[in-house]
Image 1 (cartoon, rainbow, N blue to C red):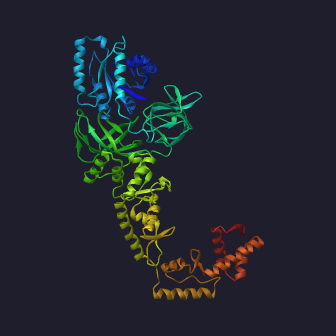
Image 2: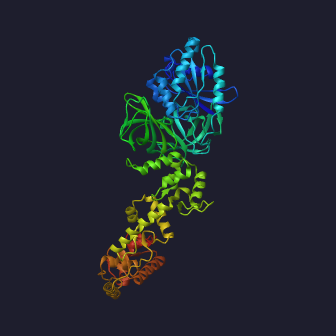
Amino acid sequence: MFVVGTAGHVDHGKSTLVKALTGIDPDRWEEEQRRQMTIDLGFAWLALPGGRRVSVVDVPGHERFIKNMLAGVGGLDAALLIIAADESMMPQTREHLAILDLLDVRHGVVVLTKADLVDAEWLALVREEVTSELAHTSLADAPLVAVSARTGAGLDQLRQTLEQVLQSLPPRAKTDGIPRLPVDRSFTIGGFGTVVTGTLRDGSLRVGDEVVVLPSGLTGRIRGLQIHYDKVEVVAPGTRVAVNLAGIHHSEVKRGDVLVPAGTLQPTRLIDLHLRVLADAPGPLEQNCSLDLFTGASEVPCRLTLLDTEQLAPGSSGWAQVRLEVPVVVVRDDHCILRIASPSRTVAGGMVVDPFPVRHRRFRTEVIAALETLARGDPAELVLQMLGTDPPRPWDEVARAVGLPDEQMHSLVSDLVASGRVLTIPALHIGEKAAPLADILLVTATGWQGLATRLVPPVRAYHTRFPLRRGMPREELRQKLRLAPRLIGGIVDEAIRCEIIAADETSVWLVGHDPQLAAHQQRAVATTLAAMRRTPYSPPLPDLDPEVLAWVVQQQMLVRIAPDLYLLPETYAELVNWVLTILQAEGSLTVGQLRDHFGSTRRYALALLEHLDERKLTRRVGERRELA
């Protein structure tokens, strides 16, 4: 299935031609038919002489509706550039042609309509002018066909020419990628519910698939699929499709949203682009200028950061980072259009090289080198460039940015691991998928060495500052290393495996770190413990430095039952055993029973029972305690 879109100036006969070719009037709105002018996107389809079925997107030509036009030209296989023979090239013809060129639409047919209104000599002049205008665009080699929708002259030749063009198309680059449907219409049908339409890209959709509408995050399920009113179970990429959704109201989906399988793509507010400014742009693009970005079927206000120049002059190109006011869904190699809002005009276009970049500093040679590598497009180089010498990045984040499905990503990462250029955390053994991919971190060998080097000094500094503490809190280490919360667990586990550090659930410490008391501290501890043994059930408060006291508790020489109350371990075990025994035999006990039996104080007895409540061994019922 192929998708062909019209382009051209208003009133040059686009919709009339589509109706003559297909028998379908693409002007579906009453106002469009009354004004005899396409306002919004129209859709039709036809069968070519060889039996090939083609979807046709008819776009408006009037400059006031250029934004609607842009919503329809994403995902085209070929274009029909419509030019009225009696008027030749007009302003919107040139703008539509510029848009097709910026989107790199390289296949199409130039259709000279209304050929019955001019003589042969005039038609030859128009052909010559059009050929000249196309010479330096992506449609430079497009064939020209003269037709008359009114008389039918040339329509058969147009069908044959279009079929030849489509037969010459190269295979689609991403037929097994992550499917995404930029939504250009959302409506409801009685008895069916929500229906959205668009041109499917990169992968296939199936009835029953769980899907997400981005950027809103609404979830639903595909209830049905239709191609040209025919129900199907599976839709291949490059197809105009209507999707019947369950679980989502049509008012919650708008033009520009993107339908994807659950758990695949994510929206972004930051995009790295290779940007090309039109030669006839009204002026240079300045740093931090405000523009409107069009990609897929979406339109988003944005700000431009020029990375390698102070301004981009008309006809020039360069690297830019776009900051979006609202998130969009894009993948690497997507094309976009940039327009100024006033006066409304197309000024530039770009290709996405990184849909999830970090914020760049300007005029950095390493940033430009990285972008150039990304633009070349080798998947292994893309992964290595994305990881660089930075800390580990989550698998799913890298896969989204590179635009590879899990199977291809797994194969690629396995090769990089085998060559020693990439490490996975936890270790990913070739041919094995032990851990969920979303839990795996990726890092280059250089990146890991750098992180391991950075990891030691803050832990060593912590030991110097707190020599008696077992280790540094994990969260404090994460903050020192400026890591995302989801990264610290995997990084600590890998550092333990490499015998750089040791750790427990809350702390990390350098291998070999063994806190020991100084002689005077040992004497203070011995004195304190001896005093507590003389009155074990209501012992005095430990008279120790806070760091020494924490060490004593860590060494299990005392048990902390309240912020300022401690018991000897043997006393604590005796008290707990007695409480549990009494509760099993009698069903309940009071604070007074515990106090009186051991000759303790109410303060210690109450603190112990509240401690056991916190441990979920007991529970308070009125003034008594029962087994939890």
